[in-house]
Image 1: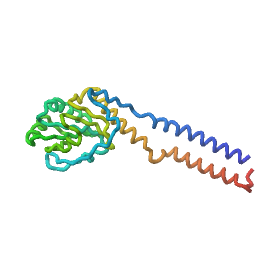
Image 2: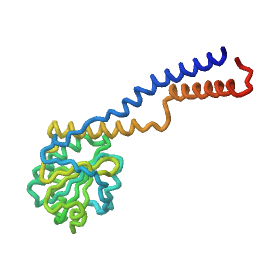
Image 3: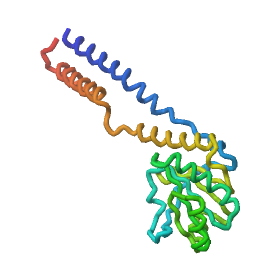
Image 4: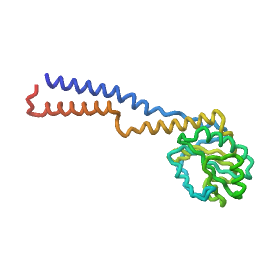
Length: 227
């Protein structure tokens, strides 16, 4: 009789646990979808390589590394003041940065093979507020295939290259902002899906199941007097 009662309690607790944990597992399988075609000419990089790190000086001489921005969604843009398409797209990047600043998002602009005074004048006229790295020798530009400009990369919080765009773009269209939101939501969702410890209710239920399982094992050992 006691054996049947203990077994019944154990089965009931296991069923309850499956009802609680099932929805959590199901939610973990549904990640927000991302449509890179929302931005014309933006192409997903299929093999998703890790973005090569590099270090350059900023306009103030302070050293900046690409890895400094790990943990954020990054738009890595290679530009020059003498590049007409760069001048065309930069105002839209400034607007995009203003909207998403402080939301685990950053634009990092690399100035390639430019005169310092021209680059600084360009940044001032465009009211650039995001980090700028100076690449007078074009070393980082060569590393990223910036043989023509602008060229832009989307890099996720882990430093993985998601997509690339050759040429200029309007970075402040509704579809562009929707894409950035989707990528940021995906980042948050991925972080939330990594559960380091179960919620208190689930942890308590697991402890109860373990306790009942031990009781059931003890009462069913050979020579046990429980009936």
